[in-house]
Length: 203
Image 1 (cartoon, helix red, strand yellow):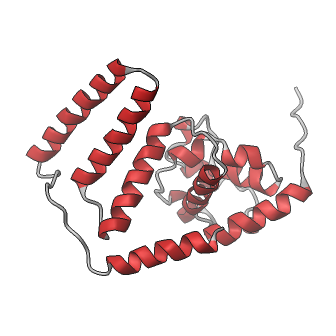
Image 2 (tube, helix red, strand yellow):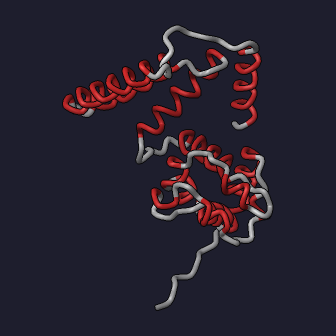
């Protein structure tokens, strides 16, 4: 049994590598496919074993479609174990975050819309308040999920999701993990400026 040849697209690879490296701050060219990150990836079995080494390889060969459309960029939990194991210190968590943003900018549909909803709700709360307020985070997250289910006319899913999340919220509240009210951190104006600057420099 022979493996299929890897197709390399230099005209696509060069600008893709440059963009990902500049936006993520990671030197992808330092990767020599030792696969230590693959053995350390905590979500490898959840991504069809599409591990960090395969993600980096897809970028290096210019496979933009695979780089922006895979399970890892949506399921990576940013544990940074891959970066600890990497002999060259490449933090794939920063690469997946960059590719997630690029996929959204390219209007690619995520196979996991709830991950997108949680990401948007989390970042939005952090930017607004300088920290995440659990009540707002869950409310915005659930509104996004509900809107998506209503759009699909899946009202049973709406009821099931709201019921499940209410039970979770009550359990968190009893454990002292759900805080009502809005707390803000000092310097949130600076966070907003950094967010605005980041958006400006990546477009």
